Structures are given as C-alpha cells and as structure tokens.
Amino acid sequence: KQCTKPRRKCDAEWFKDKVLLVQAQANGQVLQDEELEFLADPGKTESSSNQTVVINNGAYQADDLDAYDSDCDEINSAKIALMANLSHYGSDNHAENSTLPALQDDLILYVIEQLKTQVVTCTKINQDNKHVNDLLTAELERYKSQERVLNELKHDEKAYTSYESSQEIESLKHTLSEYLKEKESL
Image 1 (cartoon, rainbow, N blue to C red):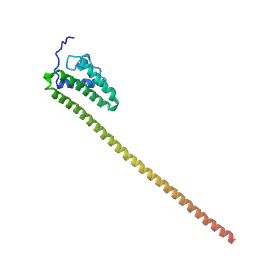
Image 2: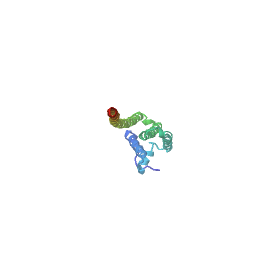
Image 3: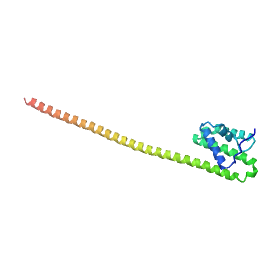
Image 4: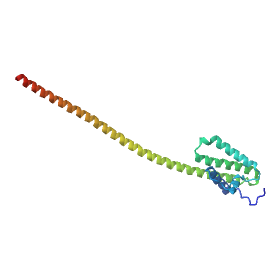
C-alpha cells in the first residue's frame, strides 16, 4: 500500500489525539475511516504491532471489565493502548529514543489530568450526596421527635381518660352511698 499522505510526527499531540480517539471509540462513537487508520497506525510500518495492541487491549478489557468503573475503563483502555504503542514505537526507532521519555511523561501527565478531573467530579458528587444525607437525617430526626410527642400525648390522654373515669366512679360511689343512707333512714 502506498501512502499518499505524509506521516505525522509521533509527538505529544500525536499521543493525545490517539487518547481522544480511543476514548471516543470506547464511548461508542463511530469513527471515520481516516480516524480509524490513524488509530490503527502504531507509528511504524509493520502491521504485527497493531495486532498485538488490539490483542493486549482486548484481553485487558475482557479480564478486568467488571473490576473498574466504566469511566476508569475508558481511561485505562486508552492508557494501555498508548503504552503498548509507545513500547513498539520505542523499540523500532532507536534514533528517537531520546524523545520517548518526554512523550511518556506527556502521556502520564495527560492521564493524571484526566484522573484529577474524575476525582474532582467524584468529590463533588460525594459532597452533594453528603448534603442530601444530612438533610434527610435532620428530617428523620424531626419525624422521630414528632412521633415521641404524639406518643406522649396519647399516653397523657389515656391517663387523663383513666383519671376522669376514676373520678366518675368515685362520684357514682358517693352518690350511691348517699342514696343508700337515705334509703336506710326511711
């Protein structure tokens, strides 16, 4: 196959573009032919390294898919694919080995930034959930307090009803006693 387009230099931008395409593909986005070719290109002319990358990436996803959050899967998949590409790229291009650590550092920094963003998002969600939990806990305490008050009122009402009944009984006893005394005196 003859390439009509000049090859891109494998620098930090190249790796960032790869990461973005891997993430887009992991999110289910349909890539154009040109993007798929770029994604499949490991930065060298042999096609065997591309197969290795796909096999390694696929094995990782199949074995560890349930062990991670879906957002983490996307970043880890991208990281693994790019690290595999980096290792193949570095082994075949000895002249550019001096730039490889810088490229790896750029990739690591990019992944760290993505992870920081995820941490910030998760922290915000956790804070929101804590706030909602605090509100619900306070509301639950109000309901428990109202229930205690109602139970006390119910108990007091029973006691009052019992007291009224005993007063009425005492009054009836007294009336009966008076009636019996009157009857005896007749």
